[in-house]
Length: 112
Length: 113
Image (cartoon, rainbow over all chains, first blue to last red):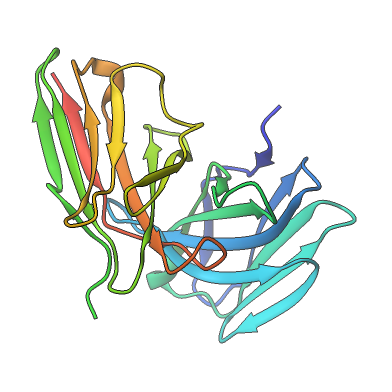
């Protein structure tokens, strides 16, 4: 069983839609949670960084962490064609190094 | 403020040759991480280095792969005697310390013929 599960999609939505992206994980030691955006043939770009449970908002993006359910989400409001990319969730333990464990990534297309 | 730099961006090698991938971290960052992204798969951790020290190499294949981060100069990921299965995108990330955010470079795409 993978430590982090993420539906690879592809997910296709019309411009202006609210997008919901999700990851589940099995290891309760994960304390730090991140969302990265990766455009085709580019490196991952950090979007959101949260510690433990709760919500964090940044512009059109909202990240949610529910540690009791081992479930994290990224919401994109008023989605734009420029949001078309692969979205990767990533997690890190409090101790034992700094390695990030990634989900497989969800490919998102926002159609104009 | 330049981000993480990687070179070359594309590298073609024949089976049995050596591949050297270089990574210059962001200014002020002394922690470097290497990840590999195979086709249709997510990023997988390989190795974590701090200046002159390997901190965690638990994701590194036991043979043919090595990494270093010397006191001066970039971090190097070295793959000896490459095989077709080594074809992938190799990403480097850096951070100011082990607890802080990791910022990724653009990657090196290795193709083994």
